[in-house]
Length: 345
Image (cartoon, rainbow, N blue to C red; front, side, top):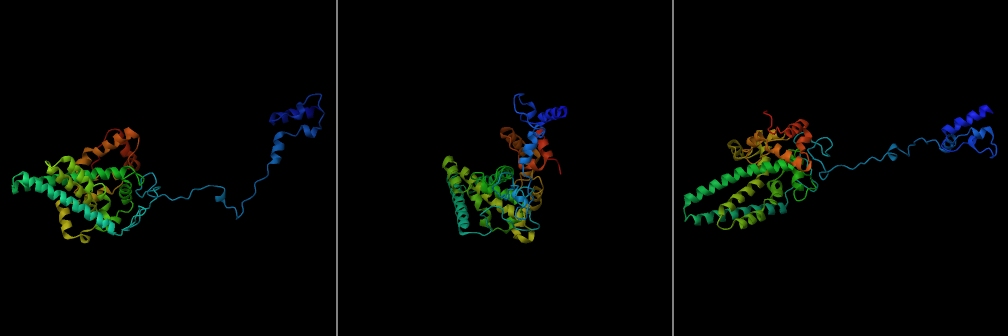
């Protein structure tokens, strides 16, 4: 009896339910085999052993593995790096990364680009004509002021192309309202940089006709009024240059033999962005040389650290990190320490 009593105590210690050994003295006496039977044993017997996998039941049926492929619409940047959903093709291979995009020039694209540049030319010519009237027909003064305005606008457009390029390279994605397609195209360009060389003129620049088109010039000219024709000329040139920046950009990816001779002259004179300066932008983490009209402003902007300063301000406001930070933790650390200038190469 002592052995049975001790066994009952041991069974009660490992059982989650009352054991027969601790029943009331008035209860019916149970046999020793029932006293020793613990709840754990009962529950263990209720569990059926796992069945082995068969060919009809592969491992995937037990593990839910998502198989969806990322696209340019997914969050995160799409520079063609690991985990971006895009792959960098080897060699000079064209690869369209924006869904619905094509290398084929369409009549709609030709119409948009033609109408846009015709509108720009109209506003520029009207501005010069108005200035000519304001100077009482002084051809020299009209020409001097007009040329100075166009040159200043060209330099400003280079600066503007750098700011635009920096912003779309580092922030947003294909889902960003209004600018989504432009952002996806610029970021996807890093995964397939040679694709741009396969595009015709209208196919290459038409997207920029939307933000820099005729409605923009018309609104600015209306706000400036008829007494300020140079404002209209300045922004007509500025918007035309911003649209052309994508074609100038394309030329910087082409060899001297692939472009007309006058394009090489423009690059040699620094009027158009050159091949070597832009090639420096395509080195990870893509943190400088953003200007793609003439590249004149690149050196000053990179040495001043203005883009790192703006990235720091954006991060302080909303906690969003630039794509350049994601590529280079050291760049991120330097920027957060207030060291905004890029290191000398």
